[in-house]
Image (cartoon, helix red, strand yellow):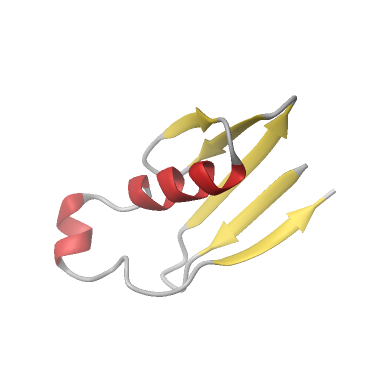
Length: 68
């Protein structure tokens, strides 16, 4: 499974699953988690720098699309 998350700012997250492990990739970082909800949360938190968050760039809803 591959899941793409897109933020209104244009930022994107890619999450891939492999045997109950979820791997995420953002513009700033990458990592893994043991659940989809945890992978989404961690990826969203790491998608913006502290300076960008101070400017409010992180505000907005992510839109998710599953690809095969």
